[in-house]
Amino acid sequence: MNKTVIGVLASGRGSNLQAIIDAIQAGRLDAKIGVVISDNPDANVLKRMAGADIQALCIDRRQFASRQQFEAAIAEELNLRHVELVVLAGFMRILSQYFIDRFAGKIMNIHPSLLPAFPGENAQQQALHYGVKVSGCTVHFVDEGMDTGPIILQEAVPVLEDDTAETLSERILHAEHILYPRALALYCEGRLHSEGRRVRIIDKE
Ligand code: GAR
Image (cartoon, rainbow, N blue to C red; front, side, top):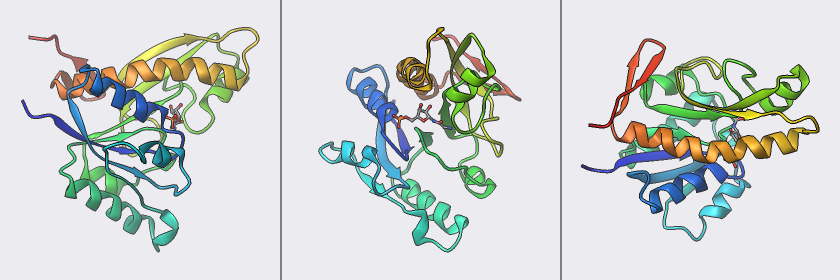
């Protein structure tokens, strides 16, 4: 079978992207990264890609008059590389209906909480403020809402007595690096079956 071509959108550090690259190299994920796009010219993720054999580019929102033009430029680069699945890995922008319609059912995101708890920014700090004893991470398909799309996989992580946002984030990030490649592998193996909001995982044949 042909490898699924994924396009990764990332705004910052890029550790989830690195976990995806590692999973591909280790043979745990049968995918090919067609392109990495960052909206932030200073993003560490672009530096990380400098020596890698993967196309990486910056599409800076400030160079476009409107959000739609910005998103159209991203979509064009993805389509040029025949991207079949858009993977948001720390992409810190909300995508509009326009973009979501162009890749309907083909955009995934990872979020550092057990959704639907603590959507939006600073999810780990939100969890600490609320006082939950368990948090975690969620991989989901992206819909028009803020972190509201159908859930694919979740992993729970304990909140410890002396946690700070930093220590909790680090513990959750470790779980993210395992969860995201697993969710992508399920997608690439054709094992995700959507029924309304429920995403069923089909057994391997
Ligand atoms: C990750 O913790 C990811 O879950 C989070 O940003 C971080 C990116 O780290 N994403 C969100 O909060 C999206 N709402 P990375 O750049 O090292 O992969």
